[in-house]
Figure 1 (cartoon, helix red, strand yellow):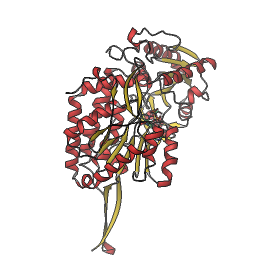
Figure 2 (cartoon, helix red, strand yellow):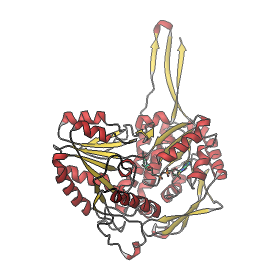
Figure 3 (cartoon, protein in one colour):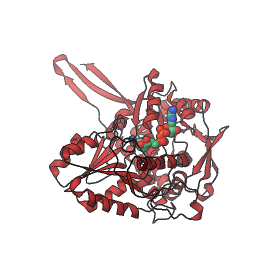
Figure 4 (cartoon, helix red, strand yellow):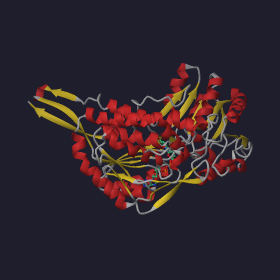
Length: 490
Ligand code: NAD
């Protein structure tokens, strides 16, 4: 009998290795961010557990990679159906584990996790490889693609199941077997997914999930000689350690990292549409999305008007009980993270910035049950120098900074003036300008007059310190397969 999510309080998670749940000797606590109480205990896995998982994945690889794409797709589609049937249960668990609203998990995280599985189950059926003739030499060349082997998949806490399935689905669809390590702060929905594997027909060893911290479980996975490929989503600092750790093995790496994303708002923008979308792009999921807007540059002639409307809209962005459907935001992931984000607001004040709303200005009215939760209201700051830490570093919370600019040239230069290059938004009704500016922005994704519209067929990833490599339809196919050129003389 399945437990409901409410009954899952104080869950004790187990690793999932070779088709079985396996107990671990020691555990670590994971908290419900909206109450500050322990939500679950998860395995504190280390080298032994990772070794067992990699061995299981290696053993399962020959048979799984020999299956046809259709057979593998059938398993992924079944997983998607089973997950969708429990959407509400998954959404509640994601909210309790991460702090986000149930509504966000119900409408974004879990539907997207289901779609990731279906998308790659379908896309693996449609790839073709290259062929070229050399008639003068009597040769024909063609390429084949084959799975790489055991994939190490490491994901962060902000979109837990969404980002884990974004890796598992393509890896497994292409015929690899995997060892996944979710964030130690949000492991529950990954564990719930493991409960579906047998019924979905995932053969033992094809998908293994090892829980634990980055320095122990994550490091053991990255440093394992039988894991030739690592797909990582997380912070730039961790990616640097992963790159160093995997360098001696020449591993294939995909690194999806942090951002400090600009919005450029030109005077001819549809202001109401822009304000409504920019509030969403700045504060959704507590600002804990790598694609969230954090620097808003506004053309000087509409700066005052924009700021007034934006602050008014941010004040209406409600923060509180994640189960209350009228709330837009729930709690931040941890007390440490809340303190870090608050620290940036304090720094902004100390450096002469103006805090228009949110932290330290508007008090939150929280129900008693959430008094110890890690909540913070949507916060808008202005008056910061572009060189300040607040304008340069990833805050990853509900904080947006607004500043005026003069002219297109300056807007582009200031938008590009950070070490990150993940996403940007451009607001203008001038078609020529949106193309011109989009092409000059150093960002892997540029949205013009919209935000977070994603076609999974197209590349996803960042420039500069925001990442190495791209994932998405064809890019995931390339990353999770090896290509070989074969020449036949006839
Ligand atoms: P993090 O780097 O602290 O952790 C990410 C994962 O790496 C976790 O599973 C963690 O346990 C693991 N890890 C930590 N140290 C490790 C090590 N030494 N070896 C191997 N694994 C290790 O990141 P986070 O705080 O969980 O996530 C927030 C960050 O993720 C932000 O910077 C955000 O921008 C970024 N992010 C990027 C994208 C993207 O697609 N570009 C998406 C979501 C989040």
